[in-house]
Length: 114
Image (cartoon, rainbow, N blue to C red; front, side, top):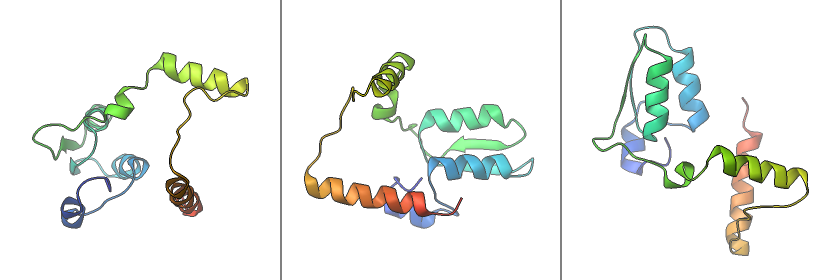
Protein backbone atom coordinates (compact mmCIF):
# COMPACT_ATOMS: atom_id res chain seq x y z
CA UNK A 1 0.00 0.00 0.00
CA UNK A 2 1.42 3.44 -0.85
CA UNK A 3 0.84 4.55 2.75
CA UNK A 4 3.70 2.24 3.81
CA UNK A 5 7.07 3.88 4.32
CA UNK A 6 8.82 4.86 1.09
CA UNK A 7 11.54 2.27 1.77
CA UNK A 8 8.90 -0.50 1.80
CA UNK A 9 7.17 0.82 -1.32
CA UNK A 10 10.53 1.00 -3.13
CA UNK A 11 11.22 -2.67 -2.33
CA UNK A 12 7.75 -3.88 -3.32
CA UNK A 13 7.02 -5.71 -6.56
CA UNK A 14 3.85 -3.62 -6.78
CA UNK A 15 2.17 -0.83 -4.81
CA UNK A 16 -1.29 0.60 -5.11
CA UNK A 17 -4.52 1.58 -3.45
CA UNK A 18 -6.68 -0.81 -1.48
CA UNK A 19 -8.83 -1.32 -4.58
CA UNK A 20 -5.68 -2.09 -6.60
CA UNK A 21 -4.53 -4.67 -4.05
CA UNK A 22 -7.94 -6.36 -4.02
CA UNK A 23 -8.12 -6.40 -7.83
CA UNK A 24 -4.61 -7.87 -8.16
CA UNK A 25 -5.45 -10.72 -5.76
CA UNK A 26 -8.87 -11.36 -7.34
CA UNK A 27 -7.36 -11.57 -10.84
CA UNK A 28 -4.36 -13.70 -9.84
CA UNK A 29 -4.21 -17.39 -10.73
CA UNK A 30 -4.62 -20.13 -8.15
CA UNK A 31 -1.41 -20.86 -6.26
CA UNK A 32 -0.20 -17.26 -6.31
CA UNK A 33 1.74 -16.14 -3.23
CA UNK A 34 1.23 -12.70 -1.70
CA UNK A 35 2.91 -10.81 1.15
CA UNK A 36 0.77 -7.71 1.51
CA UNK A 37 1.66 -4.54 3.41
CA UNK A 38 -1.64 -3.00 4.42
CA UNK A 39 -4.25 -3.07 7.16
CA UNK A 40 -4.51 -6.46 8.90
CA UNK A 41 -8.26 -6.94 8.41
CA UNK A 42 -7.98 -6.58 4.62
CA UNK A 43 -5.15 -9.13 4.41
CA UNK A 44 -7.15 -11.56 6.59
CA UNK A 45 -10.29 -11.07 4.48
CA UNK A 46 -8.40 -11.63 1.22
CA UNK A 47 -6.85 -14.81 2.63
CA UNK A 48 -10.31 -16.10 3.62
CA UNK A 49 -11.87 -15.19 0.26
CA UNK A 50 -9.01 -16.74 -1.76
CA UNK A 51 -8.01 -19.99 -0.02
CA UNK A 52 -6.41 -21.17 -3.28
CA UNK A 53 -3.74 -18.47 -2.86
CA UNK A 54 -1.11 -18.04 -0.15
CA UNK A 55 -1.72 -14.60 1.42
CA UNK A 56 0.13 -13.22 4.45
CA UNK A 57 0.74 -9.81 6.01
CA UNK A 58 4.18 -8.26 5.59
CA UNK A 59 4.09 -6.92 9.13
CA UNK A 60 5.37 -8.80 12.17
CA UNK A 61 2.81 -6.87 14.18
CA UNK A 62 -0.27 -6.46 11.98
CA UNK A 63 -1.07 -2.80 11.38
CA UNK A 64 -4.53 -1.62 12.31
CA UNK A 65 -6.07 1.54 10.94
CA UNK A 66 -7.56 3.36 13.93
CA UNK A 67 -9.62 5.61 11.71
CA UNK A 68 -11.15 2.73 9.76
CA UNK A 69 -11.82 0.81 12.98
CA UNK A 70 -13.91 3.75 14.26
CA UNK A 71 -16.43 3.17 11.46
CA UNK A 72 -19.38 1.07 12.55
CA UNK A 73 -22.52 0.13 10.68
CA UNK A 74 -24.48 2.43 12.98
CA UNK A 75 -22.13 5.40 12.35
CA UNK A 76 -22.23 4.78 8.61
CA UNK A 77 -26.04 4.59 8.62
CA UNK A 78 -26.27 7.84 10.60
CA UNK A 79 -23.90 9.62 8.22
CA UNK A 80 -25.80 8.41 5.15
CA UNK A 81 -29.18 9.32 6.64
CA UNK A 82 -27.80 12.77 7.45
CA UNK A 83 -26.65 13.25 3.85
CA UNK A 84 -30.11 12.26 2.59
CA UNK A 85 -31.52 14.94 4.89
CA UNK A 86 -28.96 17.49 3.70
CA UNK A 87 -26.88 17.41 6.89
CA UNK A 88 -23.19 16.59 7.27
CA UNK A 89 -22.87 14.55 10.46
CA UNK A 90 -19.07 14.36 10.77
CA UNK A 91 -17.52 17.29 8.88
CA UNK A 92 -13.78 17.25 8.25
CA UNK A 93 -12.28 20.68 8.84
CA UNK A 94 -8.76 21.44 7.63
CA UNK A 95 -6.69 24.48 6.73
CA UNK A 96 -7.53 25.99 3.30
CA UNK A 97 -4.15 24.99 1.82
CA UNK A 98 -4.61 21.39 2.99
CA UNK A 99 -8.11 21.39 1.49
CA UNK A 100 -6.70 22.66 -1.82
CA UNK A 101 -4.09 19.89 -2.10
CA UNK A 102 -6.52 17.21 -0.88
CA UNK A 103 -9.07 18.28 -3.49
CA UNK A 104 -6.37 18.20 -6.18
CA UNK A 105 -5.31 14.69 -5.13
CA UNK A 106 -8.91 13.46 -5.20
CA UNK A 107 -9.49 14.93 -8.66
CA UNK A 108 -6.31 13.28 -9.94
CA UNK A 109 -7.35 9.91 -8.50
CA UNK A 110 -10.77 10.17 -10.13
CA UNK A 111 -9.15 10.98 -13.48
CA UNK A 112 -7.10 7.76 -13.50
CA UNK A 113 -8.29 5.09 -15.92
CA UNK A 114 -9.93 2.08 -14.34
